[in-house]
Image (cartoon, rainbow, N blue to C red; front, side, top):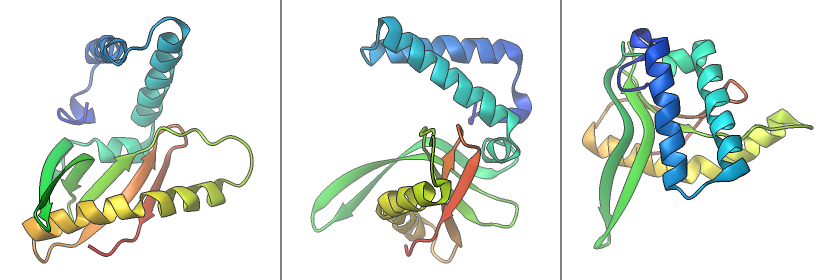
Length: 161
């Protein structure tokens, strides 16, 4: 979906994606009711993303240098680390975005407190990603965010690369 862009999306591709999701979940060892629940959750996340202005912006093919599941490696103190960035692109203003998907569906109380906690938990990871990309693209402005498709929330996370 992200590689082609939402602008190119069709019902036929949606059916193929659902089949692929089912195969991936099977490969992860899910079966029975757990498999069905996971497939339903994945389908709901896809539906909500496609219905969302934020989700459609994230997955647009109009961005330059867009990547999905972008595999990068970094070296520090003689150790190599491997990283997978869920989504990254350069927007029309020349800003590099790094977006990490989160499938949590917060239920109940204080949504802002939940989002603040998720920001706190994931900021170090997003900071590492920003640092790697700052090395590759010196001087480019970088923004990082968490995207919660089940909540239709794009939470920008301020980090220091």
